[in-house]
Amino acid sequence: MEASTQAQSRGRTMRRLEPAAIAGVMSREVANFRTYWKGTTFSSVLEPLVYLLAFGLGLSATLVDEVNGIPYIQFVGTGMVATAVIFSSALPAMFGTFVKHRFQNTYEAILAAPVDVEELVSAEMLWIGTRSVVTFFWGLDPEPGMLLTPLFAFVTALGFAGFGVAMAATVAKIDQFNYVTALFVTPLFLVAGTFFPIEGLPEGFQIVAQVNPLHQLVELVRGGAFGFEWQDLLRFAFLVVFAVATWRVAIHQMRKRLID
Amino acid sequence: MAAIELRNVVKTFGPITAVDGLDLNVPEGICLGLLGPNGAGKSTTMRLLTGQAVADSGDLHVLGHELPAQSKPARAEMGVVPQLDNLDVDVTVEDNLAVYARLYRVKDVGAAVDRCLDLARLRDRRRDAVDKLSGGMRRRLLLARGLVHEPRLVLLDEPTVGLDPQIRTELWTLIGDLKSRGTTILMSTHYIEEAERLADEVAVMHRGKIISRGRPADLISEHAGRQTAEVYAPPQRLTELRVSAEAAGLKVRPAGPAIAIVGSEQARDGAVPEDAVVRAATLEDVFVLLTGEEAE
Ligand SMILES: Nc1ncnc2c1ncn2[C@@H]1O[C@H](COP(=O)(O)OP(=O)(O)O)[C@@H](O)[C@H]1O
Ligand SMILES: [Mg+2]
Image 1 (tube, rainbow over the protein chains, first blue to last red):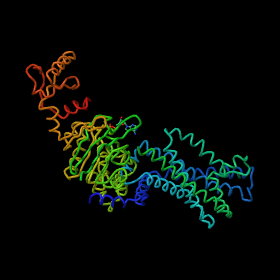
Image 2: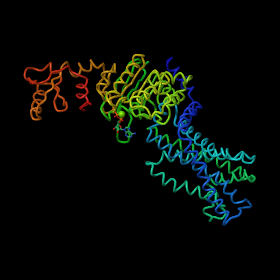
Image 3: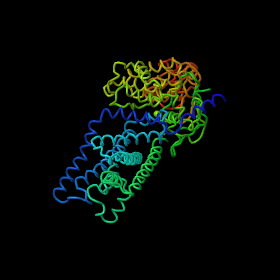
Image 4: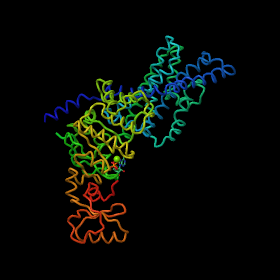
């Protein structure tokens, strides 16, 4: 009797979403990041720069001067900040989660410790969200209007990290990420209003763009740079809902995978 | 209170019943060897104990915590050493340990890391990446990582499967040390020698159930008697000998190219041929008789 009361009181001290568990899982990511950060950071800064140069300089020199009164190079630059987020969150979440689960058996060991799937997934999302924002934004000008940009990007990165984790827990083989990329990642990237305003697209695409978190982020970043509108509040709310939804779906899918 | 108490536990995967009405009680302070052939349900039992599998029915208690509801506090007090090496290979030895010290909420991470480095005899390799270590060092590190929070109960799932003999012996020494410190151990294995060396008690698992349990010496005298006679001969003669020995009421089991006539001390004249090699009965005799599977 005494033993079971003791066990119950110990049970009560272990809550859901314990910061210590989340910090522990993130510390594993930090320890690994220290061994590969150079390559990752290099590519996450270089890729957007290549796009920026190709589209921004190329198109503005030949075809486009400005969009909605914004010089084209600035139009693309602000859009690029936003689209960099999907590549530094959805893709690492997809591949990283899959590899840790299927090839390295990392989660088997973590879940044998006092860490639940909910804490594991939350920690992985927080880590990817943080990394995505930090590695990209360390080169950004801290202009007053841009101060909110890391926050917008962070919430969006959380959402796409959740998306990536959920996909990793859903596909049977790593090749199937090709479908995920072709069906979701690339279209979302293209219909985000980064390189051209979506008003120029057919109506169907415009509707898709409205439910595209990346488009909402692009608009918010431009808001920060060139002035907010009242709709931006709705955009931000949409991003928060997106992040919460993918978080719950990712937990659900991972639980199905990891707990028999 | 027993460290582990399982009562009538069932776990199915679709049509497969991996654990089939399992009763298992592991008292504190012993090393229990869960001995069974591949597919017996050993790993599933381990996963049930860590909450990574949820039983269809039955009662499960670990260190007084009821599973699956109280799985998290139970996990906080037990250590798990996996069958497969899942260390972070690019990360240093000490960081591998430190991460798990944090996951187990250890207060003094530095002290825990130092203690594990001593235990794994890796103090001078602490700043090396894991992929620079030899196979034996990695295994010692894997074991030490499971002990980073000084658990009262340790689960070892086939701790030496597929390892070369020298590494296996090294690990046996470490597991022996752990035992002598009074830690409760549940160790699954399909190696007879491993169970014989390390286990205070052996539970033979077959098709999801414990079919026999006891101290190795007791299991041997109960199921195999005192002596076993091995006969090496052409297949046809072996078949004849088998028939006549079984007709005389003796148990016979295959033993690679030979047959083993178990309990041969009770044989009447003629049932055991002159050219048989008579030896003391072993746990292997028991294992093969009970499970019908040839031992490794
Ligand atoms: N996740 C799973 N899905 C389906 N079948 C499984 C799963 N895990 C184990 N099994 C099956 O359950 C049985 C027992 O497996 P296991 O517990 O791994 O045995 P052991 O560890 O003793 O070799 C086997 O038939 C195995 O194929
Ligand atoms: Mg197994």
